[in-house]
Image 1: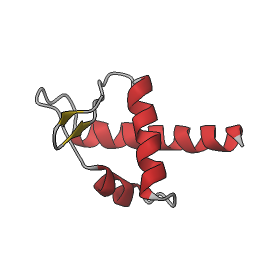
Image 2: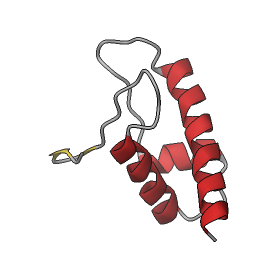
Image 3: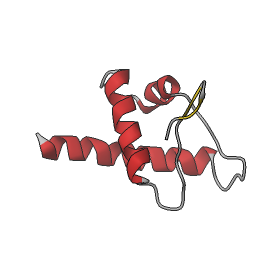
Length: 79
């Protein structure tokens, strides 16, 4: 159901925004966590694969006001 997915994404966005404000603040060098650690910290019940998909969507949309999000992997920037 689209409404359910939208609700889950909005909750994830709010949680991620609070986390980024707390840990990232205005650091020039940025801040990073791996997806597995974020998944564990979030308490999400979805599988890590789904959680990562939702995070990538948030990054794609640049959904956190005042912050620029990127995803990096071991080989360099993903998006």
